Length: 547
Image 1: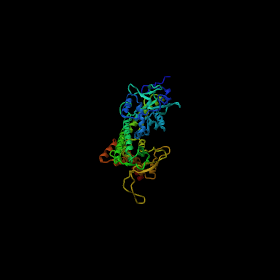
Image 2: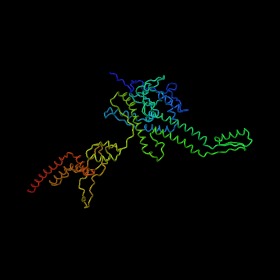
Image 3: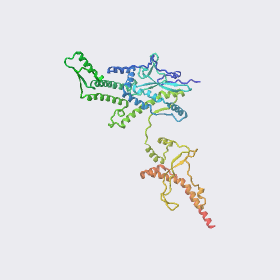
């Protein structure tokens, strides 16, 4: 028996099936992959921040990743806009396209669809999109073979501090082993996501690099604002002592003035006094800090969401409408496409190869919101194009309009056959005039329980039409019945064209498009039969008269 071909991942590493069901990057409290993190944001200043980013550029991203975590915890605005961007994509419906209509390709697509129907999927995708902030993320695939087949059991987010990049190109991801050595990632074991905010190395493509500077400057502003509020937010306390006050009395007065802000109470001798001096322009001075903090928040909104209307804009401001929403949708669409490509590359293809071996074609995940369609425009187009011969799938049109396929026994709303009688009024049985029937009217019909076809209309048979009639009249009725379908179909088609055409020229083009080679054979046969019947009827009538 021939050996199975050796599977290789995108980095050229061979797949070791025996190790795929084990966790290889779990946290160890006393080992290299420690869940404990540092706090480089304490006492951060421009020089320290520049050194942290420079270390990351040279392949040591630990402090950069820790600081990225810190600003998500300490800056509510950055946490909010980044979470909005990640959640907007992680909650979009995922569809699966089969590689073709062949049974095997459809089976593989259905297998993927069943796995995607999991409550945990949204949280797993949210963790994968951690790469938007930090520039990259690693997710370990825990494979399950308990039922004799390969299937992802769950997707586990792994701290990016436990990974590095090849020092040769700073692009190939590596993993720290139990001894702290950089080793290649196990094949078919990790989802490596790199959703870039800018072109270049993954270490320099995260939004956190921009947010760090904004957060640091805003921290300076908030600190100064707090000092200003503490100093000038309350009136100046001025203590006065009387003549001959001792040093002990002065110290008592000073303690009372110093502590009165926090205690809101003080005891001093009767000979002393405390005055409160109000500052008139405190409010105007405090606005400077608020405006600066808001401005920095708006810059973060622009970097993360591409616009400010959904978080910072004033109601009614210029450009605060759907244009800003369109920018956010563009970013959402780009993130969704990037995430789908990552999952197809690192999850779907490895899964299919483990289960069925290498294939020429694979099912594809697609993540995106359905584009809205103008259903009225589609209906108007069908009313013009279908009558002139365009063939359209009924199931496709029903899907666009949200209509289900009719089932046997359902009551069907449908158009009746066109009435080809002249539009003139007719006389009823009681001598009153009745209005002509409309050419198209909607009625309810039923499908037979088994056949699923429209029920035929009850019509009088030719034998019933000629029973009891004179021979010539009977032949005439029979010939009319034979010619009726051909004439009715042609007249109905022409009437539809007359309704749809906007001019004589347009009607002419529609007529020649519908009847490039007009087939009059049916009408010709009916005329020939009529002439033959007329001759036979005349002979029969002559014989009857002479007899």
